[in-house]
Structure formats: C-alpha cells, structure tokens
Image (cartoon, rainbow, N blue to C red):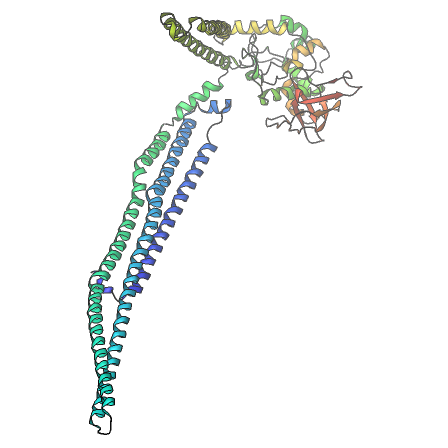
Length: 595
C-alpha cells in the first residue's frame, strides 16, 4: 500500500511523521536511561567489591591462608569483572544506539522538513495557477458580455433612421473593439486553461507522488532503524553473556575450592605453640603430719631441691609461658600451702592484669628474633623471614648479573656507554647482598636455636632446664617480670614458691586465684597525664583517649611501654606511654615529669 492514496491527507501525514520522530526521541531517552542504570549498577558493584577487598595488613594476610577467605577474594574479583561487563553494556548502548539515533534524528528532521516544504510549495503553485485561470475566465466572460452589449447597441443605432451616420459608425467601431477584446480574453483563457491542466496533471501525478513516496521511504527507514536498534539492544546483552557466565563459573569454582579440612589444618598450623601439656598432679598424703609441716613451713628448702625434680604438677598458665630457656612444666607446690595462701593473703592484683594485658594487647612488631612467640610460631616466622631474605638476595643477584652483562656490552662497544658508570651500582648491589646474607645467617642461627629447643627433648631435660632458669630468676614482689611489651609478647609469671622464698611469711598469693579478686581493688591516683596524640584503644584492656585529654595515672610504666590511666571511676585502661605526657605527684614514686 502506497502513500499515494493519501494525497488528500497531507496534514494528517505531516502529524503522523512528527509523531514518529517523537517516538524515536522517546526510545533514545529510554536507552539512555537504561545505559545510566547499567553504569550506576556497575559502579555500585565495583564499590561493593572494593569495600570488601582485603586491606594490606597482617590480619588480612593471615586470613588469606584459609580456603574460604581465598574463595571470597576470588568471588570479589569475579564480581569486579562482572561489573565490568555491565560497563561494557552501557558503553555499547551509548555508542551503538544512543549516538546513532541522535545523529539519525537530526537527519530525519531535516529530511522531513525538506519533503513537506516541497509539498507545500507544490500546493501553493497549483493554487496560484488555479487563481490565474479563474481570473482569465472571469475576464473572458466579462469581455464577451461587453461585446454582446456593444453589438446590440450598434444594431439598434443602425436601424434607427434618426441617428446620424457618424453615430452609427462610432457604434460599429465600438462593437468591433469589444469583439476583439473578447477574442483576446478567450485566447488568454484558453492558454491559462491548458497551462493549469498541465500543471495540475504534473502536480497530482508527478510532483505530489514523488514527495509522498519520499515521505513513505523516510517513514519506513525510520521504522527499520528502530527495529535495528531494538535488536542491537538485545544483542548488547547477549554479547556479554559468555563473559558473565565465566564470571559466575568463577564464583562457583571459588565456592567449590573451599576445603574445611584444609582450613582446620591451617588453624592448627597458625596457632600451634609447640608446648606440651603438663603432667599429672601427684597425690599428697595429708595423713603424714611431718610431710604436711614441711610443705607448710619449709618451702625454701623444698625450692632448693629437697623435693625431687621428677615430680609433675599442672601449671595453670603453661600455654602462655614464653621463655626460650624455660620449659612449660612447673615444679609442684604443696596444695596445703596454696590453700593457706588463698585463705590468709591479699591477692596480687596487678599480676593477673599484666597477664591479661599480655594476651590482649597485640601491638607493635615485636623483637627481631620473634622471641615473644611460642616455639612453633617462632620457628614459622623465622623460616618465613629467611625465605623473604633469600628472595631479596636472588633479586639483587639477578640485577647484578644484568648489570654485569651491560658492562660487558659497554666494554665491547664503548659508543653505547661508559663501563665505569655501572661500577657504583654493582658495588652497591654487592654490599646489599652481603648485608642480606648476614641477615640470613643471623636468622638461621635463631632458627637452629629454636629447633634445638623444640619440645622433642626428654621430660627430664626440660624439667632440669626449667629449674635452672627458675633458680637464677630475680625475685620481684611487684610482678614486673610478667608484664607485656607493646608487641604483644608475654613472659612467664613468677612462681609463688619464689615469692614465698623471698618472704617466708606464707601470706603471698598464688596467681591461680587472682581471677577471684581481679575487680575488687581500686588503685589510688599517683599523678595526671595529658594525651599528646589520639589513641583508639580497640584491644581489650586499653582505653581510647582524645588528643589533649587529661586523665589520672593509677599505675606508671613498668618498662613495657604502657601506662595505666583512669578517666572516671568506671573507665580505666592502658595507653602507650609515648602517647602521653605524665606528671607524677610528689608523694608518688619520685616526683618527675617525663614523656
């Protein structure tokens, strides 16, 4: 069906084509909004993936050892790639549809305007020709009537005998003139009629059909372009489906790579201390009065060896004991003495607090030899450090080999460079290699020392080493030895037998009962301090402080880098000594100000 049958519907066709252009604009806006949705979705997915990406800290490095953490990381990476495919969809929608339709709309509007301009121009021309034809027709009609009246007047004058000959001649000439004018009008009318008929024929059979055919072609092309764009709209999604499928397959593969048994094994490897469980507690016969008297009053003699070192006891804190020269086994102490201490002595509050702080404040890097760690963990850390140093040595050696080859090239081809310019760098690399090798030797020595002291020795050897170390330990009643350093290391708490040896009065306490009284003692204020820097205090036992905040000091630094402070009666905890400026009171342990 052709638009030629709509020649009399020019105005309606104009409205229809305008609506078609508006529909293209509407579809373009729809695709644009879809592209924006894809872009925003991809951005949100990327931000989500970035938000949960592991941070570069030791905690995340530890987590990467577990299969479920690695699977989650793989899922995040695949999700990031998945977001990239939605960005591709947005880019393709913009380039293949939005840009093309925007350009096509401009051309379509221009073409439509041209076609309808030609149609109006043709319509105006035929209307003008029709008006000229009507004017010539009316003039011919008027001239014919005038000629008839002139002829009738002449005939009347000619028949009247009273009229002079001159008047008759004048009427005859007037009639002839009118007939000539009618004849000329007839010729003009005939000419205009032929011209109009020709133009009308051209208008309705040539000009208007061509214009309407162009409008039909324009409209069909518009509809075809819309169909192509709608097909492209679906193909853009279809093109990324294989890669999206790969992303989803990667997520599935990551989930299937989780191995619970492997993760359980990694937990053991990460936290295995190398200590052995303590031995059984031996039976104490309280039916023998003499033995009970000795156990209650002669602890110093028992400490010097009157009790056999082969006896075993269950030390309460053996998993937390850390000293490379000591064994986790502790010498048995008579239970009767422990009961007497429990009933008669004031608990040593700060010792347990120091121990708790040693378990919770894992700050800092720790000693270079990792001596703050249990044997098994220390061995792993030392081995890892050795591996890192060996990798650094290999890198330096590779650089040295490359520079050596470059120097040989310069020697053979002086125009390429000066061989002496490489010597400083070679010397620097050699020094670096020597330093790294010395570091490796140092860590290998520590590793060998750890492996020698791993719990593969006999119980007798471990116990004897334990007694020798305990006998050489300086007795301290304030429990400063068991305080923790900021790196989270922890040291062995002094055995109650040593404290009894320093103070024969059996009123000292054993750390086994410190838990019972941990929250009952309120320490007095010994000074004030001002926070130099903000401290967040996320770990257990610490307290968060703001820069410039004033606090009360209730326990000064014992050499471990931590000071105990109080904000009010309910808030107290430890802060790094380097973060505060302390002013001790004159009646405290020496009036002094330090940072």
